[in-house]
Length: 634
Image 1: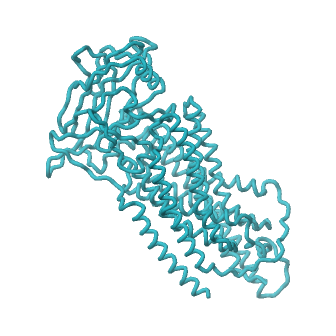
Image 2: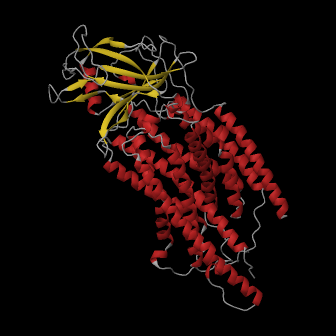
Image 3: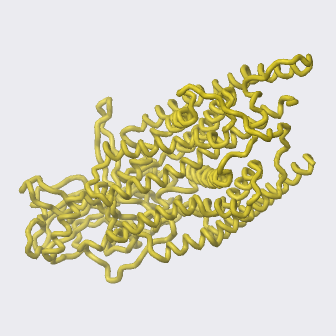
């Protein structure tokens, strides 16, 4: 029977991978991640796209043309994929005339007569520190900033977008000034074969200049001129002249290394300190696991086997004492199985996405590619969610496999989608451009119920057909009493303390991820993120094994839920970290913005909860099964 069970398991795993790759192709519609370089002949038009207006104060993006900027004859939507919509990108065409290799000096774009209400809207947006987001050949517009490093050297880092305007300064302290002139610098290299221009950089320097009827002079890139700034503080109608300059600068940068300059941040060394910190934690835990397996546990097994050979009677003690209850099914086994299955789904999605990002298949300049890949992978991994959920439910001696499959298919996605709908309603009510349209919501629901749910049922079917691993330990009819434990060995205390180490290996990288998401800075350290992800998985598994062993030695056999909740409690510390980050780094003044911040933080914490919980549970399951199958139980 055991041989047939293993053959059935191997056949089911092969079939699972076959269905997975088929569903991956269908759900992605033959989507291939990555971008390609496009070359422009000299004088060929290069389209400049405008994106949303963003602010770190409000976290509410707005459409670019919601402000009285110069408009093209026909505004066209340039959004290309599902990920762009979900990330809040609203790409549209612009009236800027840019030709490859052709410099432009102080070109008038248009003149706009602003009314009082339009001036008031611009003043509000400037007060809220909104920045303008542009795109040129998938390069986001950046503003170079200079800083001094610890050795006194001047270095450059880049801020995404450019400011809409400023408040105060010369000539009036409390006036509002609009940046109506932009100096555009386009970095490029030339293909030697066909002599085409390939864009490798896109920098913008925005300034406020009050032009006369015919602009006489504009500043060069990075070199402002002494001119009256364009004030918009008056309440009556004001005529604004928008101008721009374009500089093409050849750069010896290969197209494949085009994003390297954006990864240079003032605190790059902190990533290495984070990695070293994580490695020290994992070495400590690995040492503890090795101590348990090679010393304490090995000596226990030898002692138990010696008693078997000598046939001497000796009262059982330690983890062997609870052998008759260690495989007793836990409470709420269907819920536990559903969370384990969702953890597999999130784990697979995260692993593949980070790996593809680290090797360059998924890049940030291909707008929405990472989010699109995450959606496609999450939907496709429903196959493995159903399989592992069914396997866990079978081990817990569950019989209602249909209800368990329904819970797996709807619990985690339903909670995430519910929170997302609430936040989207908030965005719609505020008129934000990042609100997801109704038709896009229908696409998400179709992916969920049309692809993910059927895949969960298919995986569950395979999981229920697989024979569970043979267990040599029978379960007693009556449960054993659990002795009273000191407070520091309490179930809830050890569970909460166990989440500190998994969170400790990721909190520094988590800081950079939060900074990228909320403060609109670049994060391109996917190699570090992959290493930290593996360290997080190892740490979650090892801390679950260590605490599971000491729990069994304390004659407490309720390890099923604890093995999941111990590493999963790191999500609680992530929420506490989000509170700290909000109070120290964010300068949010609106209640709606606070709701958005903590709403998305809650979604991220739920992802971390099921991911680390799955790793801890399966590592503990393998550990418990192996140690109790290695000894003879009378």
